[in-house]
Amino acid sequence: MSTVQTLVNVKKALSTLNPKQAREMSRRSLHIALNAANPEAYRRMEDFFLTDLSPARRRESSYSLTRGAATGGNYDLVIYDQTVSAPAHALVFEPDRPHHIVSRILDRHYDLGVPLARSFFPFRRPFIERVIAKTARENTLFSLATALPDIIPSFIELPWAIAEFASDTAFLTMNQVRMAFLIAGASDREVGYLEQKPEIATVIGSAFGWRALARQLVGKIPFGGGLIAKAGVAYAGTKVLGLSLEHYYSIGFTYTRAERDRLYADAFRQGKKVAQRILTSLRPDLAARYAAADSATASTPSSPAAALS
Image (cartoon, rainbow, N blue to C red; front, side, top):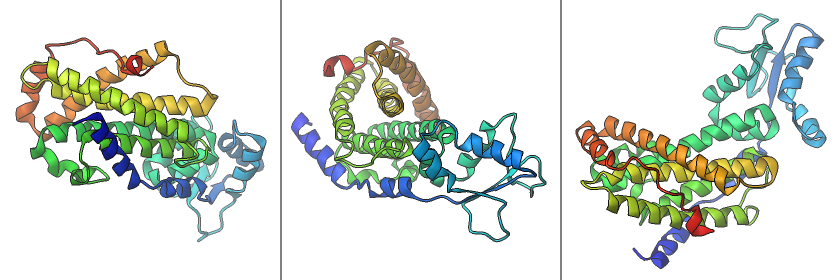
């Protein structure tokens, strides 16, 4: 498929992706009830939730926290300090390991991740890491499935059907743009194509570098072994992009080339392991054969950033 046709497919795919949902998620108001035994315990809980925020954001986010929840109140979350009795399976804040509550809340209420990350800094990186991991795994699975059509039924795990896309590049790019929307919303940034124009342009531009690298790997490794490497590229490209966006929104500039190359090398190795696990669970009869062929090259391919710079 030509570069022009691929670009047409990417444009068509992006036309179906509306940033409205991510924007609405980022603007969703939260109502969180806190229960503690005394004012000091309340302050301790509030200080944790409101840490490392700008004065304006801290003031706005503080309105989401209510001391002493009334019975039957309409709250998104009810959190108990360890100084008070709590119902079984309740969310309990422990001062000696405060970040434990973040993991428990995101495990149970992933759908609240964007507004929680936007409003409360302790949730920001943990939620973004989950978004990146989820998107990278989806793209790895898609990359495998486009090469092995008989595992397509597993696409119930993905948010879109494979039949809607003319190329894997179109799907991977759209999924990465969706990830960019979620990361922006979670980072308390504006969400949308115009609002994120430089970031979206980077996603689209890098897609062609990853596509070329994946094709190169498939051609180099014999007996179909390039499938694992190709899926590893899909994983690595998505993860490095997500980490770069998080880094940019956090401190205002991107990684250096050396930092990006290190991230890519680590992500590529991890991505091949993820691809191997997915293939083993879906088609154990093929997994061993592809793994053996893939071991023909143990080196990590260069990041396509060089070709794009």
